[in-house]
Length: 174
Image (tube, rainbow, N blue to C red; front, side, top):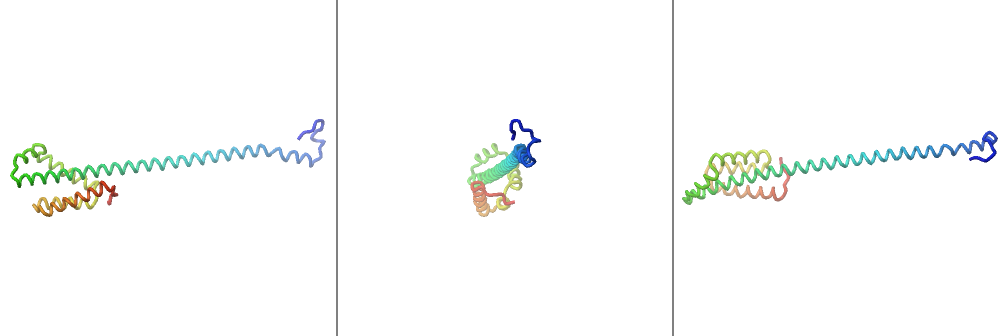
């Protein structure tokens, strides 16, 4: 506060104190506002970084789940393909359709069928559920033993379990 013609020294002490009392407010308010602005900017940035990290983690988990589901699906389809080949070979053998067996053997030679069976079993052990693995093992044992009735029942159970997992989006139970 300044009055023309008056010097500061001419004012009484109280007036000088009152004039000086307000001079510090503007710089302090400006400084405080700056500090608050910096703090909230940092806080907003930190929240943004945390949100981005959460989103990246969720995306990674979703990608992992999708990859594992695809691996499981591939293993199950290979197992079903193997089972179907065995069933057809047996059915053709029972009906005396040797030409059809020969066609199957040309398309899927014994070595390729064995390889496919191994791939299916390895895939189920690595990515499949315990239930499907148990059913596949039991089916293989029944089929090797020539137990057609047990083999047929196990194939139906296996197909139902696979269908439920793949269509129902069942979680891995391992």
